[in-house]
Image (cartoon, rainbow, N blue to C red):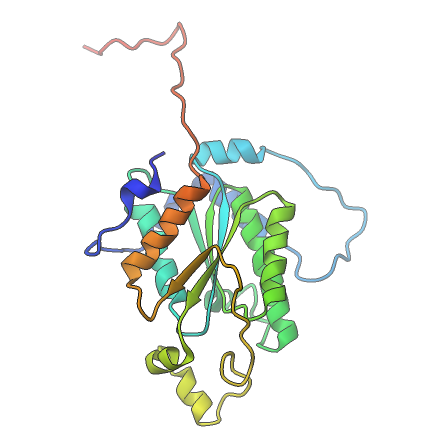
Length: 261
């Protein structure tokens, strides 16, 4: 598996979407686990954790360790844009594709979190569910890219603890843009609705956003291009060391390596 630092993306690189069929059996196993994830406090009794293929074997099969990148920032800061670019950089612009899955906050509210709103207790449950799903994917060997506003430090700390308690690597990525800048961008037209009084308790305006105090990656999107933002994350992934060394499989005595006529 190649070092990420050797294949950071060129500023002119085309970032197309990753093919859905590339993830293989590890993806299917993780997805099944996600669908079985509980969405509330532990209520089941007389249950037992069933072990299968070890984490190490799963990681060996994909060639790298699983890890979760938690992208946090105001609406319009660039979380989704950078997440998609990073996904494509890892899948389509490396010598060997990485196993990547992106958990986008908006997308998840169409399914897994469709019963949740934006009250503090709903945001807390939103982070809890996504944390558990991300853990399952990381366990299967995926580089998980979670893009959520997740405005409360305590909730983001919970996400970190879920991974640390499972001995899984976790990186908080602060996608940082000023309120003035995100109001200028306003990609969904939400800030205009806030200004018109159509939306109340909006994060960063009349509801709090508690900025990370010590994120592993801090990207100031007011002054950082998308390509450099992606490369900044790739460099951090390199320093964390998620790539596994590969060994050649020796031939058995019954196997022939002679050229076929």
